[in-house]
Length: 175
Image 1 (spheres, rainbow, N blue to C red):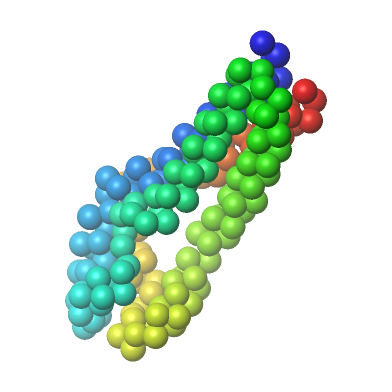
Image 2: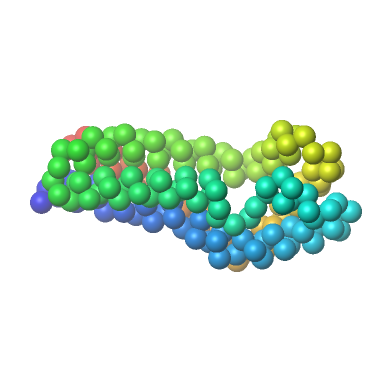
């Protein structure tokens, strides 16, 4: 087996694991985060039902699962093809490692601008009650329900996706 193909495959498997880490965390602690968000909404005098009415969730349902799950699946497929020595592995590495790298930039930007993003999402919903939400307090309550190591996991996840995608692309360029 080609050492470069092996390096690409290992990097892709690490990227797949990184993409799955946050949905797994949200699946485990999402209910606790929702309860904290509901408590904060009640403190603000806003009906907690507004979350369900607007399909706002804290678990890993919907795009919070299928998007990272899809990234993980294609990285695993590309890794398997690289391990098998298939030229399709290199082709898929070029495509999906590039997309993963760029998608991670968007994810990081979204996380860094969470208050702004949530406010914009609430405006798009057009619900007058959502517009009254003190978004920083709301997010702080929800985020505070996740374990203290969540921020570390997010940073490790970003590092693994950026470095793993770059390594896979470099290996693909040299194969």
